[in-house]
Length: 245
Ligand code: NAD
Image (cartoon, rainbow, N blue to C red; front, side, top):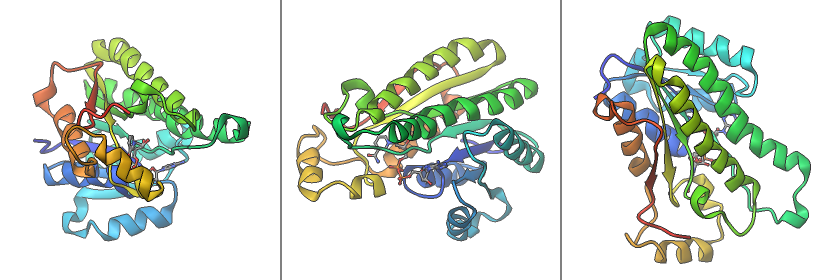
């Protein structure tokens, strides 16, 4: 479905991002995984050797416009194009408002919002010049319902939805589609860190009867990146088993 296209997947070293990178590679794309450190990127690449020269890694500071522009240009130069940006890197929080420090709040907004803005700007400049592209952001079900602690996380994901809808309207004239995927509870390190009784309670409350797998999310990312979604822009696609918590 993505033969000949090139994608950058931020937070592509593990969890949902790694599943997206694999799904894109399995569907014929060239992929650059962007991680926070060279070490973790190289470790992830060591597990992707079957894809040979079609996969590479970058590790710019995602909040540094110059570093991101340089890294994205390297990817474009290596593969000849940049068609898809998956803005997936993210961190979560469960800190109570009473204990929330400004530093922690700024950190989550940096990784979950500022980085999406910076990466989208760098990618859009390349995509506009080549005639189009697709940007897909990782939102969350919490951007529908909020959550009872760690308010920085839902705040950041509401912002991701706002960025998605605004950029979809702004960039449509440049043939750049912008969508988001809002996962429900998905089996990754982020979820493994939850207390087991909370994880079990969450799964029991999901109408489809299970938490999501990273591949469930990657499948939505594949559809939205592909030409099958040519007339889809500005949506946040929920992939959550109809969870409502
Ligand atoms: P994860 O912790 O397994 O992976 C997060 C990824 O983001 C890692 O690759 C990590 O290296 C990267 N990352 C974190 N901080 C970074 C930084 N400063 N610079 C560059 N990369 C950075 O988490 P995951 O569950 O795979 O989450 C991926 C995305 O999905 C996140 O945006 C998260 O908010 C969202 N999400 C996850 C769930 C879930 O239940 N797992 C639910 C809803 C939304």
